[in-house]
Amino acid sequence: MGTFQLQVAKRGLITLPKELRDANRIQDGDILTLVDLGGAFFLTPRVLQVDKIADRLAEQWSTQGESLESMLQTLREVREEYASKG
Image (cartoon, rainbow, N blue to C red; front, side, top):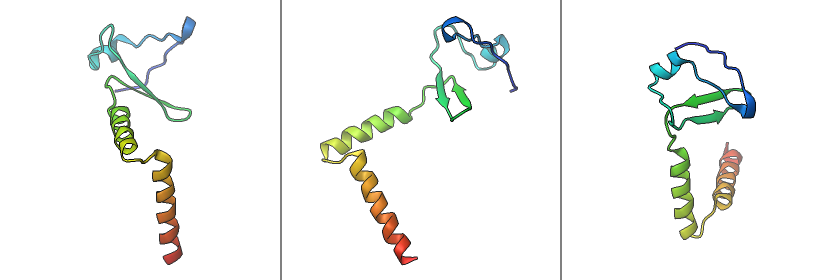
């Protein structure tokens, strides 16, 4: 582990240091996942399952007549109910 400085080349290309590639077994053609944390970045050599799970849930909700918006509205209502009891 450590801190690495990278230079951005034309078209946004960056080169990962050999030490980092070797330590994480990153090879030519591997897919990395970059997560923007709002001013900081998180780069992982793993494919995150969050998007796949979210897509499956959205599909399941859709077949049940639900949407993300309806789920969020229900969550807001339940929060308001608990807040009024507190």
